[in-house]
Amino acid sequence: MKYILIACLSFIQINQCPQKGDSPKVDHQQMDLLKNRTTTSTNINKSITLEKILQPGDDTKRFSENDYVDLIGYVYDVKWGGSETCNCHSKDKSQLDIHIELVSTLTGASNEKAMVVEISRYSKGSYTYESVRALRGKKVEIKGWMFFDEEHKQNAVNTRPNGTNLWRATCWEVHPCQYISPLN
Image (cartoon, rainbow, N blue to C red; front, side):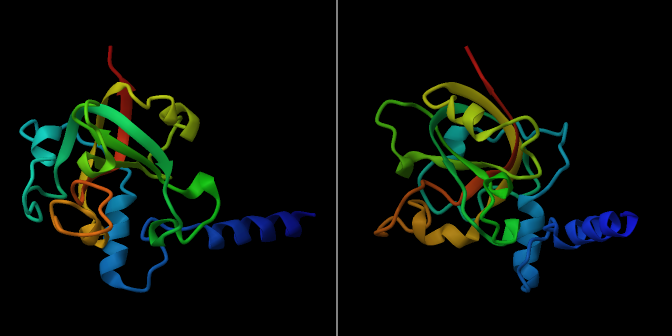
């Protein structure tokens, strides 16, 4: 019986998805390490606001992935993330990111006016999909790391204003989001 338990534990450890994900490409591994960060910071860049993030124009170099932010906004929508390299292409929802579309106002809100905030499998803690989805339409405070998701340049108004598949304002995300709380 001891041997079976050890074999099972070894199988689980071998098949656990690492923070660098499963891409063979080094640049994707580096991006996935940023998406799956577990560290927080007390050094919050207070000059970055949601309004500045959502400001129109090419924002490719506007911020840094070394910036930790504390933002206030409204949750427009909440969705499951997909199967991707940062979660080793898992289909298990417990391993998927929770996508939050954050807007500065609910008046006239749309996903084309939103920034994406993602709670990763490493930053979920006590957050569940249901508890985050319950925040739709509410004003919230979020904290986390800035991340420029290069893979979505074609989907962002700021980097491709004349695109046909636009579903976000900017490629800048808070990813991972490590704190989210409703405000009164």
